Image (cartoon, rainbow, N blue to C red):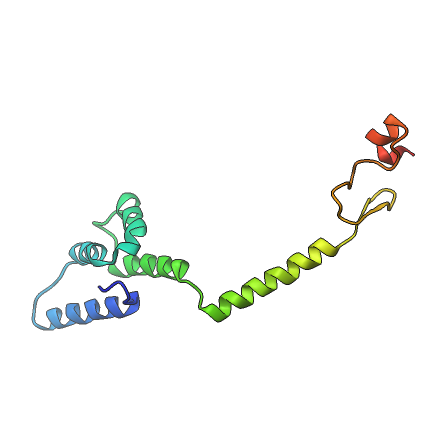
Amino acid sequence: MKDSGYLDDFTGKISQIVSKANNLGSIIDNKRLVRKLLGSVPEKYIQIVASIEQFADLNTMQFQEATGRLKAYEERIKKPNKEEDTHNKLLFTKEDAKEKSKERKCEHCGHGSSNQGNFGRGHSFGHPLVYAFPHME
């Protein structure tokens, strides 16, 4: 499999080869097929291959299961295209701006803080008890 190739194309080719082999009377067992698949994927799949080899029973794993695990990993590591990435950044920026502009108010007395970092430090600086427990004014 080439580094730039997609997993669907590669597994489709393998399935065609297996089908042709079956038509010619040669049976390729599932164990061998899974091992060949895991051994021939590009290096970017090395983490999932190592995980599959460590935690799954390759002797009983079906080819479709191995393919499914690799496809799930491929979807996870896919980089979004530039337009999607820009859109996500803009949404984050808008949400971030909304959060920063919120005025926070005390749930007990309604005293506001304009998000200056002093929220919850007390309402009166003259009396230590009020400073420690601002809601006991």
